[in-house]
Length: 482
Image 1 (tube, rainbow, N blue to C red):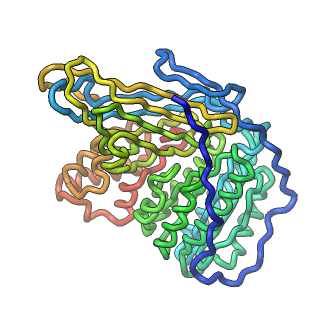
Image 2: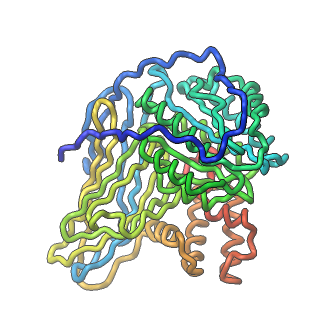
Image 3: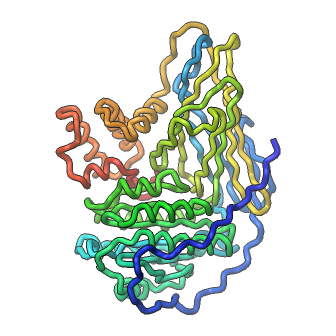
């Protein structure tokens, strides 16, 4: 099929914050910033897997994703031919290859940090931990062997301000950055102006995308409490969703409003919301630095077009960051579309879909076509795969694929109060997290949660922070991805 070029939407400049800004001196960016070179149009290399079932089309050159494999796994390898059986499929998307932007071509990524400096951060278990994490991250990013990373810094409390605007990390003195934060008049004031934080972060992201279309942009919002004016934050997120940038949330500490962050961010590009503690915050910032050097695609547009007679149902993102797209994610039951955001080399992206099949006299049903497009100035690269499932006579079903069953148990518990579904999800997560070498604290927490559910049928005896950690997509042991 002919792939139409991707048209980038135009958004109006983001608006000013709702609250009155406090009087504060203007803080200029660090001087002597290097000039950002002109970046040549993006070029990608096409590839195919060994079977030839997954293939790519598009311009070729030295940089871009070397390969993206799309691997579907059906819960049952065959479905009954009679009636209209429902089948579930887990799609694993695995990018590998060189970074999207070569280090010699200019910045490889732009990281925008939006940090909560409200009064609740004035705690020896929070503010000093945050400043150390920033210092360590900047130290990692000063090593430019893997390419230059730009840093922008927004702080918010009673108001919001930009302290750094697209500064090369290699030129940043960590002590000077921490002085900027320490001397901010917003520090430890009593308000959590997430609207102002998103307003300024969105403006930085928009300007960056316009100036450097190839460079991936990622926004990280860290907060330790309940943000004010959630409705205003929704409006700002609606604007940010119109530009190709990733947004991630870090809910810091036991009092962080994880649910509000998930409501704002989950389902967007990137869209992960992690619960971080004093002992894991530094690892989370280390991870931010790692990802900046491993991005192989700025956008990944996933489309599923179903054949006539096949109807799409409930759809979920399983990893990274669990999210329910809903029962009506397929337009007219036929078309599914989402922007996965940036793709990181070596990281697996998984989605779970439900399909209802028509009755048939044949031993196979073609479900439809999966298309993953990587837009670029030189033209999109397209990876495609046809989906088919075997059919058999009778109503018996073969043994299920345990990986698909576990994914179902985890995602189908999203938003449900059913104790049995929650218990199944916890057991599935425990098996997965042990296998994937997740944070030992989280594994221990899941053990406790399973015991609570088996004994009392609820998690009421666990603290707010513990329940938040269980709801969150949590950080893996450093270096494992996930």
